[in-house]
Image (cartoon, rainbow, N blue to C red; front, side, top):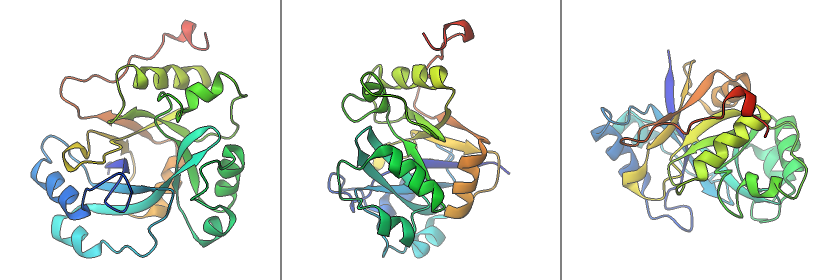
Length: 228
């Protein structure tokens, strides 16, 4: 049974968003024909919203809510899935210059997974950092489709995926209610918990999906052009 999840969203717990979680879920329920989401992941900036409990809202709207984090590193912004006490003890998520390679390897060692997000975005994306630094090791996947990206940014991400053979996810990066679910990730498996999400992200059995009107997935390079 496939599961479609928006892996990148921000609620009012993030300092640059005013979107209540209940409003997100109501929007999804009303527009499931256009954006057939089974769930969302709240990836709050520079924090893990440990105390949040969304079970009543999940029951009310029949939409799954999982929690993760978006952290800032010396290679740009990255999503951290499977956050636990051990990860929080090792890494200070409020640090805006976390060492990316240490985060990727340390989170994996402690049971989570890290995915660089909006890699085509200037300054905070992986593509720009790869122009002056060596590529990171042990990258599980990158965010190919980002609903908040500007023209050309997802195309840069597609070139990165082709060049390095990375797996790809999708997320809306929503900070506004109406943008939730514009991009998402379709998993082959039934995903209902954060542990199952981490397992499936490591498995590679998923693909990014785009629900933006008249917006095809960015065209990836032909095989003979990859790596150029």
